[in-house]
Image (cartoon, rainbow, N blue to C red; front, side):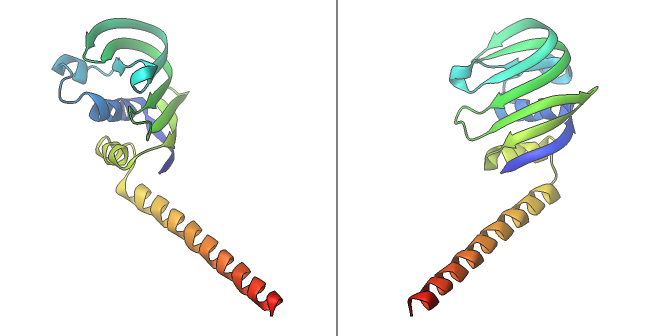
Length: 149
């Protein structure tokens, strides 16, 4: 599903944690809004673009960093089915864009990045496009039949 929405940095940080490390992130890191997981590109990229970053710890395939003045975050799932970018607009508000898998959509809702209504509207829009394309393809099939008679 396509995502294009304004959200806070903290909500997107929560989403990343829910999607990657909720079961093993240290409690202190979970509570600190300046601490983010990062991951190398070969295992599904998580990259925090910030004015300053300090590496805190490596746990499993993640490196936890303390970051200040965050300009953007790139998140790509291990499967590649989710690819999201958060870009700062002003302060802690940013625009989140990209594509999210069904599992990521559940975690985006859980982290309050998007609402169920947002998903329902997006799905309505998708079904509207597919019914429109079916209608136009059946019209062109009718036109082809008529011209061949």
